[in-house]
Image (cartoon, rainbow, N blue to C red; front, side):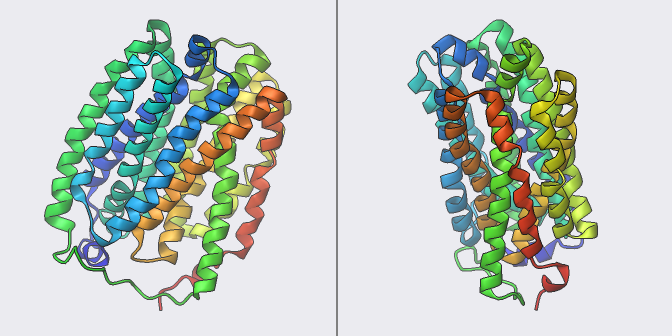
Length: 399
């Protein structure tokens, strides 16, 4: 893909960036509906927190296992027309979720939605990078912010439409998946016609790098450790924050969804800021701030009143979110020419960590309390100290 990227390095194709960003928004809106329905599903099917965590596990791990495999394959053999297949799987999951009458069907729906995410992210992230005109941080942030906006919209749609009118109304949102199928079909045609090299069946040339394989491997491990700290904490929010507000402060379900939107909205804004800032001041500086900078706020949150709990989620979301785009682009620069594999690995790791964390956190909440889970997770951003071992910009120059 290096040849395709160089071909349009001088200009940014904003129409394509906007299209994949919009589809990322649609994809993650539908994902967020599943998470936002947890209080309804708990009441309707008498689920424990452990079973809620298992739904997250099925959804997240399905996506995480497939994403790096798909990314690795498409680095060598791009599949432009795989893009519309992703929302087709998501549509299947939405239909199953709306018609589910038992817990196993809910798990099956979660798995279908996870497969849709696994297919979508590697190729869509590659298209965003190719269409960036060399502004990789900006493009990755724009692409990622679409997903974060979708994640923040999901709880509002659940609060205003699904919770008042019942589980079956989730079927109405199948229209969003159908729209994504149409848009991504057009993106796939553009990708195939303009950006795909003629020798897609052969290995692509890979740029040189002046970092040793040991340094690259160590840096990737550090980035994955930072991903662990970030996404275990965000998993606690996505799966259990509404329950924390309901159980700890006795707020209503709809109010809890609105408070979740405040956090997710801040998260979306932080995501967009991280990439362009990284283009200007360097990825490592953004990673430093975005992981470790959240620590004072996460430590304070479990001991705050309702007002300050909601207020603290704003800087937590802003700061934590700015890390992801910077980490993805930093990793892509560590392994140039492996955009799909890196995108799949990092998006997949994000899903996998969140899914794997949800189950033990859920069982821990069952045996202790939601408050204890948030106290335990509050120290995770301290893992950001490992950033000191990442090579700086001067060592990241190509040979």
